[in-house]
Amino acid sequence: LSHYANERSAKRFSPNGVFNYTSLLLSKEDNMLYVGARETLFALNITDISRTQLQRNVSIKREECSFKGKDLQIDCFNYIKILLRVNSTHLYVCGTYAFSPICAYINTSDFSLVRNEMGEIITEDGRSRCPFNPEYKSTAIMADGELYAGTVSNFQGNEPIIYKSLGQGTALKTENSLNWLQDPAFVGSAYIQESLPKGNAVGDDDKIYFFFSEAGKEFDFFDNTIVSRIARVCKGDKGGERVLQKKWTTFLKAQLLCSLPDDGFPFNIIQDMFVLTPSKEAWKSTVFYGVFTSQWYKGASGSSAVCAFTMDQVEEAFNGRYREVNRETQQWYTYNHPVPEPRPGACITNTARAQGISSSLHMPDKVLNFVKDHFLMDSMIRSLPLLLKRNVRYTQLAVHRVQALHKTYDVLFIGTDDGRIHKAINVKNKMYIIEELVIFPEPQSVQHIELDDEKGLLFVSSYSGLVEIPLANCSNYQSCGECVLSRDPYCAWTGKQCSNIKYALTKRLVHFYYLLQHPIIGLQLDFFFLSIRLFFLIMIIKTPDCFFLYILQKH
Image (tube, rainbow, N blue to C red):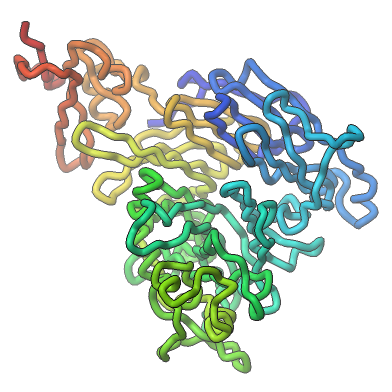
C-alpha cells in the first residue's frame, strides 16, 4: 500500500537556502530535535518541527578551501557530521569546515556556542573526529563523556582511524601502520553496556561497536572485493604500557555476511545498521539489523537486502579463532595454534583480574604483540536476507519493537535512495512490506532516520529538508477488513473505526481483533483488552466482512 507523506499528517521543515540535512539528534531530555545541515544548526520542537525553531549559523572562510584545490561550490562549506549530547547541558558538534574540520560545544539552554572569557568561541581541532571531505562516510558516538569516532584523519582521506578522545583518560587510536582498517566506509556505531548487570560472574566491560564496509584483503581470488565488518573495542581500554602505547589493545573485527544460500555473490556492502537492544541489562538479546547492497552484477547490483544478526552470533565470532596474515605473501589463513593468556583482544574480566591484571596497561607483551597481527576473526557472522528487494537501493533504517499483549513484533522503517520509506514487519524471521510512503516530492536519497518511540514519530531527512510523520496510519483504513488486512501492528478495529492500539487500549469497551500472519497462508487472531477486573462477558460475532470480539465488563 503506497501513500504520499501528505496523506499521513506529515510536517515538513525546509527553510530556504539550507541543504544537506546530514545529522539528527533526538533529545528526549528537552523534547527537542537537533538538526545539523550545511552551514547551519537547528533546534526544533519535537511536537511540531515546522513551527518552533532556533537557528545557529556556522560560517567559514571558503577562500582558503579553494586555495587547496577544492570545489568552491561543493566542497568549501561546513557540513555538520557530528551532533551528540555530551551531558545534560551541552552538545558536541563537529563539521568539515571547508576541508579543515573543527568541533565546538553548544549550550542547550539558549542554543549558543560556548565561549571563553574573552568572548571567543571555544573550538577544537576536528581531525581524527570528523572527516575533511563531506563525501566520506564517518560515525561517532558518545559514551560517558568520551567520543568514539570512526573516520579519516588526514586531508587526503587515506588514513582511516577509530579514535577515542575528550574524556579524562588517554586518547586511543587504531594503528595505521598495521593496516587494521582497509579504506573503510563507516555507517554506524553503538555503545552496549555489557558490564551489566553489576556484580555478574563474568565481570566484563562495556563495548563500542563499529559497522563499516572495507576492502577484503583476506580474499585473493577477486580483485577489489568489498566486505562488511563489525568491529569492537572495550570502553575501559587504556592502551599498552610498552606495546601498543596509546593504541587500542582490544580492537577486533569480523565479517558480516548477508547472503542467499549457495550464492557466491552476497550483499556485501553495508549501508546502515540499527542496533536494537531491549534494555541496558538485556543486552544479550540485542539484534543488529542491517541494510545491504551488492557490488556484484548478477542482477543484484541494483537490489537491496535486510539482514539481522544476534548478539549470540557476534559473541561466538569474537570468542572464536583468529586469522593470521603472511606478511611476505599477504595471504590470510586460520590460526590453529595456542593463543596467549589472557585472551588477546578481550576486555578485562574477572578471569584476568584473578591473574592480577586489572588494566590493559598490565597486559603481558606477548598478548599485545599477538593482537597486533591477529585483529581479524576467522568466523563470518552469517545471516539470510529477511527481505530482498529488486531494483531498490536502501540507504537507512530504524527499528521499533512493538509490544503486544502476548507477542512482540519488530517494525522496520527503511529509507531508499529516491525518497521513499518502506514500512516492513518481521514475522517469524520473514519480512513483509505493509506500506510504502513517498516522503519527498522530488526523488532524493534518505540521509538519516530518527525514531521517537514514545511519541510515535519518525523523522526523515534528505538533501532538501526534514519530514516528520507518525508511525501509525490507522485512520487511512476505512473498514474493518481494510484495517485487519493491512497487517499493521499499530492498528486495530474498535468496532467503529481503525485506531492506533496505543489509544484503543485506553477505552473501557474494546472490541477488536488484531491480525499479523502470513498474508496468503492464513490469519492469526490475537485478542487485546485493558482491564483489571476479573469477570468478563465475551461474545464472538461473525459479520460478512469481519469477526468481532466483544469483551464486556460485567457489573
